[in-house]
Structure formats: structure tokens, C-alpha cells
Image (cartoon, rainbow, N blue to C red; front, side):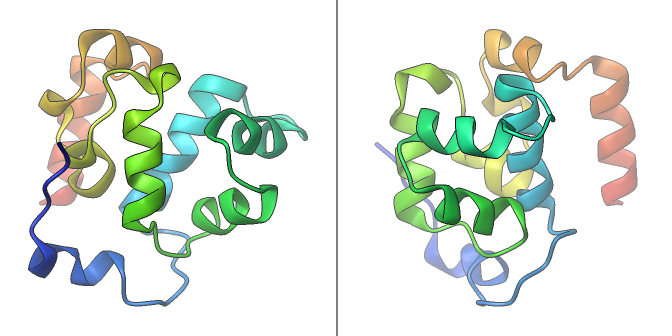
Length: 118
């Protein structure tokens, strides 16, 4: 069951578009891992997730990730091993080994990401 403290989500749900938001960047990485980064990747990913193209395009463009869409991603068997902790906070240890491999999250890359967060 998905439980996330509401007070910790304020920065993720402020309604402002932020293309450099870490959650947005992780959603783009998820799309790249599953659909590549060519012209049709967004449409294919939206179909895989089960949402309209416009909804998926919004979240990878920096609009807030809703709890409903996050739950839909996490509960989708195609994304087995995905976690809210990774999507929202970048906690790699919350991902399954398979998902880490799919996302190509190596130890060196995780260390670099951690150090850039401060």
C-alpha cells in the first residue's frame, strides 16, 4: 500500500511547471529506459502507463506528478520494482535490482547524484 506523508509533498504539488524538478527528471529517465528518447517515445510511454499523451507529456515537462498517476505507475506490472520513494525523493535503495538495472543506475551514477543533491 502506498503511504506518503502529505506534508512532504508540498514541493511536488505546488502547481508550478518546473522542468528541472528532480521528480520530472526521474520520470524522463523512466521513459528513456522503457521507450528510448526518439520522437515517438512520449506517445508510447503514455500508452504503456495507460494515460492520454497530454497527461504524460505534462509530467515529463515539469508539471506536478499527481498521487493518482504515481500510484498508477507503481502498481503497473510493467514497472515492477518502481517506488514512490525513488520518484519523489530519489532514494535508489527503494527500487528493485531489476528496476535499477533497467534505469542503468550504477553505483557511480548514484554516488554522483547523491553528491549533487548536497
